Length: 295
Ligand code: GDP
Image 1 (cartoon, rainbow, N blue to C red):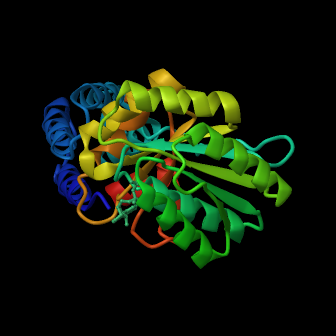
Image 2: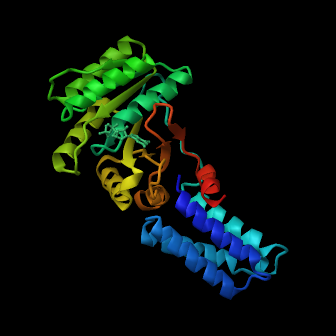
Image 3: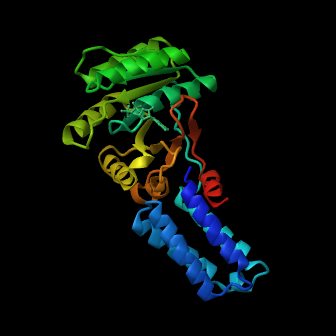
C-alpha cells in the first residue's frame, strides 16, 4: 500500500538523519523532495503546496533547529501533518438511535461498491450485528446477482427485485423487508454509472429522500487517482455525503487519492478496501496509514 511513496520518504528521512546539523538550507532540500514524492504519488498539487508550507513553517522554528534531535523532530512534524491531512481523528459510522441504521452506498461503476457492500455486511456481522443487503443497481443486472451470491456466501439476507427499473421502490421495499427481518443495519447498494450524470444524481437524491439514511458512503477507486478526488467533491456537493470508502489501496495503486480526499472534498475516509476478498476491509485510521507510509 503506497509502497513507492513510503520508499521515497525512507530515502528522504535517511538523508535528513545523515545531516550533522539541520539548517534552513537542508530543510528546504528535504521539503523539495517531499513535494516531488507527493506529486508523483498523484496527490493534488494544491494539497501538496499547503502540506509542504505547513511542515516548513513548523520545521524552521527555533526549537527544531536548536533542539536535541532536529532530524527526529522534522520526521515527527511530517508525520503529524500527514495524520492531519488524512483527517486527524478516526471517523466512524453514525449509528441510528434505534436500529436499524441505514447506510446508503454510492459510487461510479467499477469502483468496488457491490464488493464493499458485502465486505461491510461481513464486517458488521462479525461485530454481532444483523446486516441486510438491498441491491438497487438497476443498470447493472449482474450487480444484483453478484450481491445475492455474495450475501449467500456470508449468510446475510439480500433483497432485490429482479427486472425492476425503479431503484427507489427497490430500496423502499428492501427497507420494509429488512425491518421485518429485524436487521440492525440496512445497506443500500445503489446504481453506478461510468461517469457522473444528472440522472444518476437525481436517482440518488430520490433514494436519500425516501430512505433518510444515517450514513451516505461514497465508494471511490484509489487507482483512478485525481479522478477519485474529483468524484468525491462532486458527489459531496450534490448528496452531502458522510464519508468516503477508498478501495483498491492494495497492489501498486499510487494511492494519492487517499491523501487528498479529506482536504479537497471536506469529507473523511471511513473505510479502505485492500483486496478482492470479503475480509479485505479496514476501518480507516489516519495515524496508522501515516505510520505505514513513513515507516
Ligand atoms: P461496482 O461496479 O462499484 O459495484 O464494483 P465491483 O464491486 O463489482 O468491483 C469491481 C472490481 O473491483 C471487481 O473485480 C472487484 O473484485 C474489484 N475490487 C473491489 N474492491 C477491491 C479492492 O479493495 N482491491 C482490489 N484489488 N480489487 C477490488
